[in-house]
Length: 323
Image (cartoon, rainbow, N blue to C red; front, top):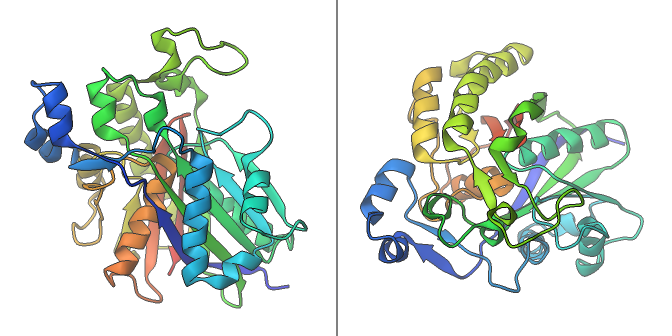
């Protein structure tokens, strides 16, 4: 069995309903549409329908992948990353296996990570392939944070959008995945949290049923951790900054990413910020951006991509992948 791996295909799904800045401005007159675009780089975001879940969106993203990459249907492992599961149990990945008509001989599991979820998924897929456990992995990331947002929370409603992506990681002759750096600091768990709804605290109709985010603390954490991670992953892969062709970070918001790029010294033509029409889609933001770049013809065989995910948890992951 081949034990090296590469990204072989990406499928994306975005809900049909769209929440534009103008609608937010009509609800919150002091919240100007143009100001939202200028500061956080978001013009609109897609919102899941009332009966549409992360599981539904992940299924559609996978079907979109199958239409352009039929070999993805033969993957022998399925990873499903979401923080908005349909059920506490059973595992969503098991349901997806059946809905997608995939083999019952495949391994499948969910994992609960947000902004770092895609990078963690790539690292896990690499381990599964390198260990001879799987020959190809279907990695699905899907999120519906909108279902956790208070209608009166203009700040978070302007940032988060719903979306899903499905990525095929296949075994191959030549290794396309470099070394990953993963990290965790649970001391920051209270700064991005939905406190009610799990086994510890049931829902009670209070504000704790909704998503809470301490924006300044998330910003401080990101600015402190990510530059160090970039230096570490480059050193671990025996690379320098100028050897990277594309920097694809979790699309948190334009202000944060611009500050990060300036602090690290990233060249603007290689550092991609594109969330104007999607918003912050959490674990799906990196693969959605990769697919945008692919469609534009910006990605070429042999291009080196440094990907970084960071946020809720706190959890963070970074790695280098060759296209």
